[in-house]
Image (tube, rainbow, N blue to C red; front, side, top):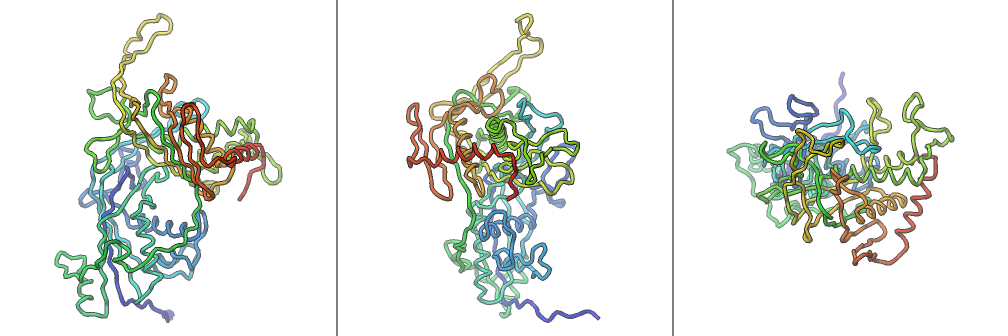
Length: 502
């Protein structure tokens, strides 16, 4: 005989919240499958063909945000956290309750489809790796989705309402990113036009209004008034925020030209190679950009080069002083520099079935817009090294972004749970970008991609430092030796062979 539940949820009110989510940067919401045209196609509604944002993706992002805010990055959820209050039991919690929040699938309205190329770069040769090129479909910035949430509550459940307010406010403020590659600049969103209704289920008219709330003939209860989402919900945001991160914003100008190739041109009659442009909400024309993937690629490659130089290619060892290798045959030694960089940027390669060493990147880099740049078509030709004449059928045209005195671009980088040695490495990377020693984009061999540092702000959990170009020198405020100490700690750490297991 089946046992009956002795406790049941007591639901006296239902709150319905709707809003309009807008993409601030290109985003990818896919189903994980490839098709005949694209390696990573977008997920669309099978009925009307419009883009679709699954409710599971929204709920997962909101829950993760609450967990990280209340407990810190990388911490496991507990039963008393706001995330468990709003979303119910978690994996491993056999006695977990059902989520009181219903998150609906969000139908979308496309502002256009953008195609992006991706390719893995060999850190030794700085050339493309074989069979590592792919393309993906992206929803253009400016696309919108209709959000709908429904919360079943007991009367005067203050903790639950505050959890909902905290999660939705994080979505509105852009602290929550959605979709694939969200730590590389994709999936930046904001929400506007919040609307809130409260239905008391013990009242006949409001109960009927709730039942009809999703119908065209709805007779809705009066909408909640307020200037903000918090006022409409009558709730407040939790003051607890245990996230720790370092945040670098650095502004540069272009010293010459910059070329990050767009794999899909506007027409066949244009130049053979054009710098990447991307649509932006509220702007009629596409703007030149530097993708977060390009930033991450060059920074990772230079970080590995710096670490290997300091460590003299020292082989990593475990806590038992046993040498570590990349493969089971022990033919490829695992270097301490590679372990150090992987801890920051995530593993460079993942073997199929290896779940133990899979970690997300702790570095989040936003896509950068290039403002006030010029554009010029340049004709080039390949030269025969033996005759000195033009190579047959090797004439091509390019359209790079050209820097002017007014040209500006900003690197926006966040490192979660930073250590002193990692802060030292970030400063060394900033120095190489600042001085033009680290080019970004393609054709660096002919002088493209050099940047010139103008100003930067580096915030850590302890303090904030500013860097300003003053002629040929750099002014640092406040004038302390703390940044220099980070670099020294970095030099000492990468010279230790033993791998940390924190």
